[in-house]
Amino acid sequence: MRCFRSSLPSLRRLTGACQLTLAVFAAAWLTMPVAAQAQAAAKAADTRPTLQRVRDSGVLRLGHRTDALPFAYLDASKRPIGYGVDICNEVIAVLRRDLKLTALRVDYVPVTAANRIALIREGRIDMECGLTVNNPERRAEVSFAMPYYFAGPRILVPVSSPIKDFSDLNNRKVGSAKGANAVPILRDRIDRGVLKGTQLIEFANNNEAFAALARQEVDAFITTDNLLFAYRATAPKPSDWHVVGNPLVVEPVAIMLRKDDNEFKAAIDRALAGLMLDGVAARLYTRWFLQPVPPSNVVVDIPLGAVLRDQFRWPGDRL
Image 1 (cartoon, rainbow, N blue to C red):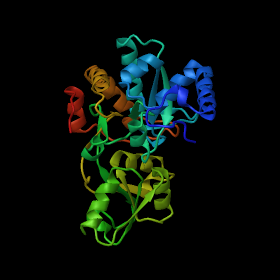
Image 2: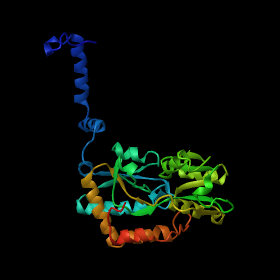
Image 3: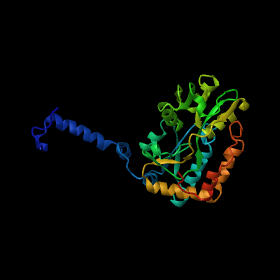
């Protein structure tokens, strides 16, 4: 329908039909509850800094993995638990105190390796606490707080496997989860011919990748080393599996944030530094890596490494 008769329209030149249409739209908007109007506008484009949005709404949306033991996974009651979740909960407790947000509510939002970056980028979560590696490719899309762990991709295989390192993966089928930081590294090695005849299969999540290894559908499961130790520890017979190979790379694991949200990053980093200097982070590490963890009371048994020990002593953005 053409509402205007020239390029310089005025209300008097509206046709009757267009006047009626505009009146209906205006009435619908004006009768919409104010909260709904605000929500619709926010969905269109919420460009507020995270701390301002949190103050305005009284809600902080925490993204967490469900399959990353002992960093972020679900207990028997389907509640998120783990080292990363505890770190983030401690950070939020500091924010409540320092920002005087005693009534701040935390909404826990499940994420996957494949969608976590998009959820941060689109503003659907405020921070992601799990096992996300801070690397240059991801820093092009999101920002990170200072690291609270360091990890590198290694290989999980049956003890009977001849695979001992990445050079043994030629002409083998290997599995990883979509979105895992190991995937682009492996793809690059395959494309450059460093790995010859290697077939990389990407599964929906780590559980599916490990299940495929157990069914002998792939020869190896590759992801960050701490996850591999966790899958070995929780297997029906842990002695059937071992973690092999030198890490492809050692990278920092950190809380993921919206890109260039410097005020929020500064607040998170201050809280993290306090947790590290006060010994809270080290106690949480012992709790989740060196002691039995739910639901099966397994011990992941990864001693505190030298790089992370230094991070706890002298907190900073180590890349």
